Image (cartoon, rainbow, N blue to C red):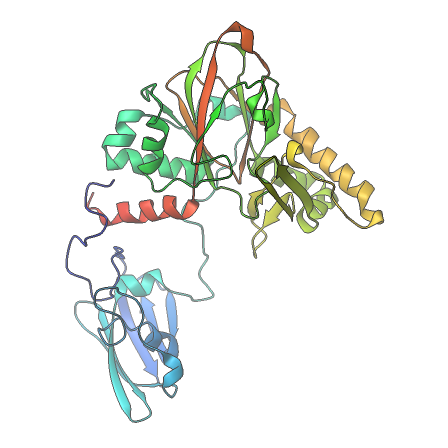
Length: 400
């Protein structure tokens, strides 16, 4: 939990009916308007144009937003398209606009911080707030690490943990009490745990009759978890309770780094893995879960969005005959790159270590171990990215 109650605003609802702190040091120095919109010039020479319908649709007054739920109640479909009859910039940098829609008039007010945060001008370069920092084996010298007490006891620790996950895709906690249940305590500092067919959490131990390769003592190639789910889990947590066996070191790789290098060095293979899906399937006595999806997914702007690769879960992929051999070649190229030591972060999880990583970016595996040489017991669970991002936004509301 954060230092303040998540469900109660720390101060009266602001003018924009938004609990987020949207502030800017920039000032509006010039205002122009016509019936179809307003144009603002800022003190850094940025020009922002806001359309009349967009402005009225985003009015946050009690007539347009529910005063407690803060949800939109205004329905633009029920009114004629509006015009702007006047626009005034007050000394406190609040923009006041008078609209007319048919016979009705309406007054909307907008803070400069809210306008700056929601500026949709085409000239603005939209960088991600937490851009991914791609890494290779060299991360062993600078892996983000935090103490359990710092993470659990201070908002600054929680924020640092989240920022590391969003930036590097991986973070290590040390000093976690070696007790069953501490894994869920760490996870619920963020939000609810995402359950799967393996339950709310799972124990990674060598079993006599395993239903998954993870529950053996054999080595595991780099992979992402639950690739057979339509939407795999976002954040995976692995907590080491016991580890005194020979072998069993964990291995990680930044799938985004490998995929970007694949895109540069083998563009045909990248395009094939990005445009054609392969089947992934998990089945036992209780479930049969499968999906077909690309190994590499990108967003609308071509930026990497998800890596989905798990050899144990690969099904009998059905593709046109002309694509079978090229697909195997593309998979082989990507797989051999994952095996290249320059990409691989080797990490022995000691008791009390808890590693968290973006399961849609960072692949993980392990070296084989001898189960007769001692004990190796890990516990794992998953979190949704939505809850991670929500917690970060809630932290932004708490005064520094």
